[in-house]
Length: 276
Image 1: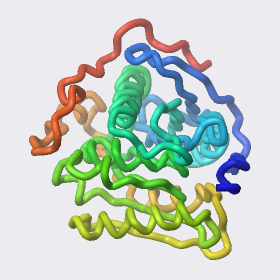
Image 2: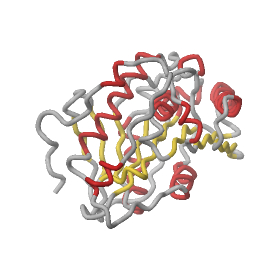
Image 3: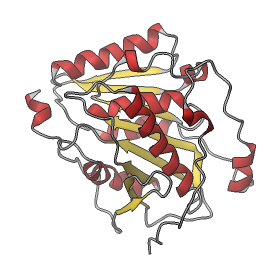
């Protein structure tokens, strides 16, 4: 608890030639940081990194954009760090209502940005740190057709607010669960509980890593390596709009019903301002 209350400073991944932006998503009215690499080329689909912050005010979206933007520039990824509502890992437990709101925010941001940028739908990472593990598990497992993989890092976990909310297809999603050997006891216990739960319920691609000597630290390089090893190369002869059309519809499942199952995430209102 002491380590959590002390705050979680950003671990920058390199200098960047352009700055971050703080935008408001027009459908939900929520805000998020975005970094678009200088090397971005609209003729080429760009991978996406979405990083979920932990407990406010000790961990915020600005820290995450500072952590990830260097990798965004280095590997040509668009980085998105949304402001979320269900990430309190100190006094919260990842309530379902908050997770549904975070799901709406994340999917709406992706949808609205797809009008402006050529997003590589085959390569989207959802990751989170500390309390950001709640939405990483919930949103990622509920949408295995959207995300390439998920990586809850040094994260909280609550199976009571997750079980029954994801489709069977989620069990094939690659999942990376790292934590430090010197992490707070609560984090270590919940991370191990997450791995045990996933394996017990038939998730086939779960990888855990206990980092020797590490405390409550972000260690984004490990997650970036995991993501890059899973990158899929889209067919460059198929235009982005055609690739999107060919995507399979979301599978029908017996997961608990949600108003989000029929939510319209198309862009409404003005587009965000141009970067440059």
